[in-house]
Image 1 (cartoon, one colour):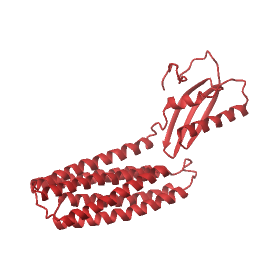
Image 2 (cartoon, helix red, strand yellow):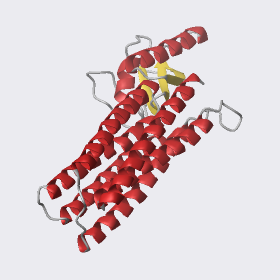
Image 3 (tube, helix red, strand yellow):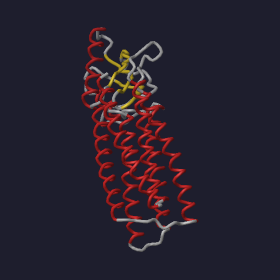
Image 4 (tube, rainbow, N blue to C red):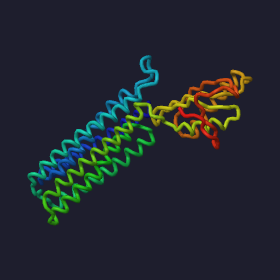
Length: 306
């Protein structure tokens, strides 16, 4: 698929940028003996390994529908996002332990103006990479690109913190400030991991993709629809599945029901801007029949909740 080919190209570009940034940071951190800069470099290296995970996931996600996967393989992208969150969590733990050791036995880094300028240069690269990847992730509705951009975006805040720490030490602050910044680095990494995990977990656990009331309000715009109930939705940003029950006049023909179902699907798709596929169960409307669940039209009380 063309979409997955474009995602691959983005990931390869970002991988090259992340490896360059990581090598520069780790090299400078080792030379000046900076815990925070070295930690920042390993975080950038993790960005690169996350790109590799993404490339592997895209290989599987691009596979077409088959007998064992009638809904396709796209959730391999989402699984990869969970793996990225796991890798970030592990990295955050490593940075945290290094920071604790640094607080116990602080070393004064040898800081030069040149090293600060190089670090600022890598920051510019990270800002470009994160912005580009997030833009393409939204355009292509890609879980892996959006997760990876959040991963890279955390690197920006980390690098800013490192620059502040090294500048502060150069101006006379105690060496322990370097390790204190590393603690902040760890917190940012943990936050990024949690953000990525929760987003991916929502997809994998079939969290509602569209609000039930939003769907009901759209469906009630059709005068043929008397009642709507048992509304459910799930899926990813690029593929949403909606199923619902509607009640209509029993005198409607099968052909009219069929046409109405297509019109409802198109209404939900155009109004939400999502690639929606609907499964609509049509029932004859009996005015006095009891309802297990009913989502009322706008302006009326919802009689029951599912």
